Image (cartoon, rainbow over all chains, first blue to last red; front, top):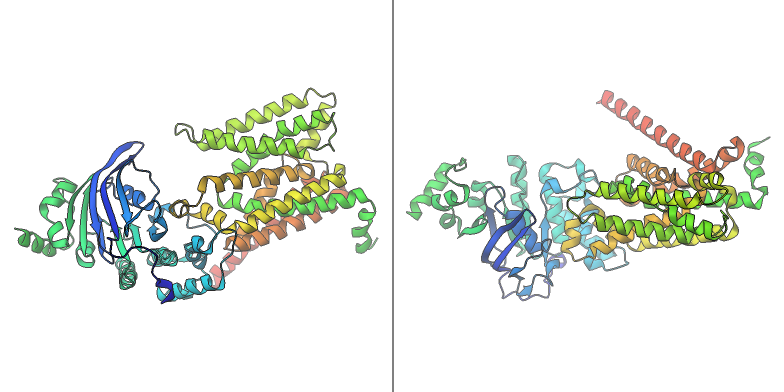
Length: 266
Length: 285
């Protein structure tokens, strides 16, 4: 399909390769230290960690919103400074001005910005691509809605659609499940399935351990440093969670699943 | 007197025709640029920029020997852009909030302007003209300069609309797409400064803010997409320019005050209409 055409990048390389990344921001200069991991194309990775663990910082470094001095990030073999266009970013919901006068269609069209080019307005093909994507994510009926007139699940889908319009190969989602109900969570997971079907790599931060265990290929546990990384059954151990969250472990909605992991681990 | 002659009578003088054209241009472009001011929540910066151009205007004015019809555009533009850059630079200090930086630059420049004008003998009259505008003093050259500045502003917004939209709505995406975010922000400020300078003669410094914010805020109540908002705001701005012109002629009130009161009346009408509709809908539901 035309909307999911491949970009001129080396698909034999890992989708996302982070090597010895150390970075921070004024107020917390050591938010992340010596982070190393690699994600293969099409994989889904959940990032788990307490508040202030550096999840957003990691995303901002990958997407190019934060300068870092130590380490290296590459996307399909290309240095991230030259390949940001391939990285889509769905910011935390609180960072969006929902009263801004833009429709669903307008937001998705923003993803086409660099494809359209300077001093131009969207062409017929850009409009067709955006309409295709809206159809794909069941947003076509909502295209003319102002973005505040959407449910929580719909709002996140709009930003996922924008990343598709951008032709992103790697998509970062910052806490998309926070503040949504069970139904909306289902909607978002469904949208993620569509992305995966098109070979798009997903890195998503969340507090929902259960969702991470059920719907993701790998789980990354982060708290300033990378504490564990691997398939859910290997990464979500009592030890790694205790390392991340301290002795006051969060309450698990489904203890059975986690017990299962712990037994395997033991 | 019938309506046609009521409308045509004032136009028998060329200088009054120029005044009408000036108000239409000014009402239109201020409304267009004002949409970005409103959606980005920069009203205070808009007001500050309008006041900060005073020393530039004052310098051009004293240099031309106290002639209001002299070329005030260049000085005003210089002061406006310089102020915008200083504000942007000061705001990089984390200890200084942006609105404080704006306030300090605004009052400094304004005070400097007053100091410069006060060296002239016709101080009080001159200051009144600059603060509140004097539409009858618009010369042929002024009108041409205003039209040229307006064309530049409209063309820039037409060509860079999608970038300005992106920078206004979602800085993260703009950064991650490697757009020259800082440059675009400064360019938008420069366009606001150009608009203010072009509008100076017609409405003056003190009421400039109304032309930037009221049509845009009114349009936002009526539509929900930025480009629609720009078209509606421009319409409201030009209509108010015309209405303000006639009100000014017949009631002998300064044109700036007339155009602003017209804008406020339209805003009041729209908001009253909306709340009535909302109430009716609630009752119906």
